[in-house]
Image (tube, rainbow, N blue to C red):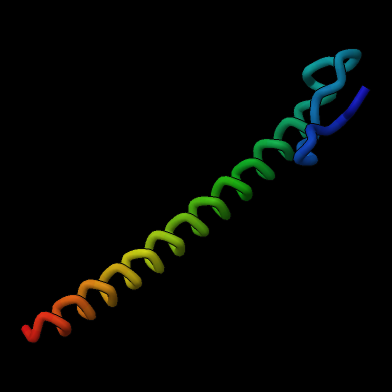
Length: 67
């Protein structure tokens, strides 16, 4: 039996009591939180980059129209 998920999060063991696995579950939740935060940061950076590119493109179009 695997004791971690494919992403490496620790899993509880079916033969353990919940009290035995509470630290593993807390560790998994902490790792998930770190991963979600990193994904949110990456998404925000990608969105900002896309918005900058769009503004530059819009300015080029306006410039070509002699505004």
